[in-house]
Image 1 (cartoon, rainbow, N blue to C red):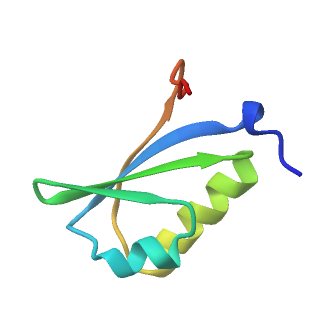
Image 2 (tube, helix red, strand yellow):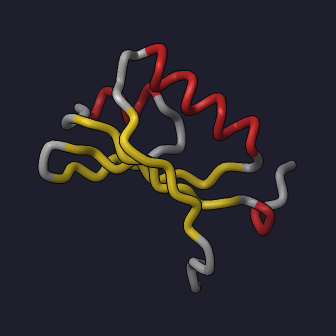
Length: 77
């Protein structure tokens, strides 16, 4: 079982507006459409999971704009 406290949140911005079918193909990723771009939000266990996600985006032919590790953000509940 993966320790959820060690997971890192990422926001990955790609060019274009991705359809909801990508949300199903990219398990555990939330899509947030913006002006001409889509932000993908994901909590990943480690860098290998991040690279796996980035490789999938490349394989789909999706253009990467930025990758940001979001620090200091925790859900309260």
